[in-house]
Length: 263
Image (cartoon, rainbow, N blue to C red; front, side, top):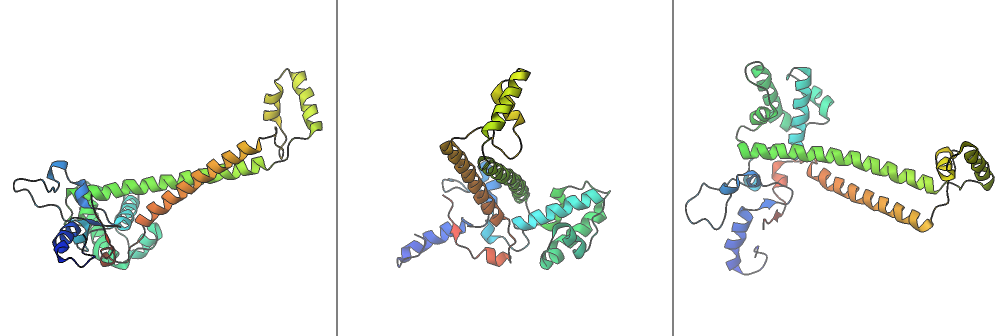
């Protein structure tokens, strides 16, 4: 159907599907359009032309990585009370900043925001509008959704750190030698003299470097496997999200990927 065979009759259908599909690594701005204004094949009367897809947007629009860079710079400038900065100062805040992005978009938007301070309300939306003057409300909503996704990625990174720590702690725990019989007997006498439950006393007073009770090897293995599987799933999810926010070489390069057909 996509023109990958010798049947010329497929060409119109392939071109139509390609026109209204988003490339695999891009996001379709039409997803952020009001439901009743989205393009449909079932329209029976003239409607407003559909929003241009990411494949047909020009280089004045931002990708995910650039939106995140802009957001970090905006928050930094807002916290310091000034939007005037050099390229080197910006890189000290957010890391490497593409020179073309800086010259063509960020520097201009920062200067304009600095000039407008005290005249109009300074918001991230207005900052994005200065970076991308052609962006409509639906594009701005898409940019904001990317920030939410990036915050979700940061949350996942915190969660995976906790999971790694939990797995390492559990592996160290099950590798500990069991409490020697002599020490267990001494603790039993101590628990009796204090009127404490033996198991509770051993659990709370077990000397460092020993496991208070013998474990079930099958249960230990099951718990370790569950933690390991959970860690692998979290790491895979982080890899997928990180790839979406990786810097792109150019707008043209991102448009060269095969389209992901919207079904």
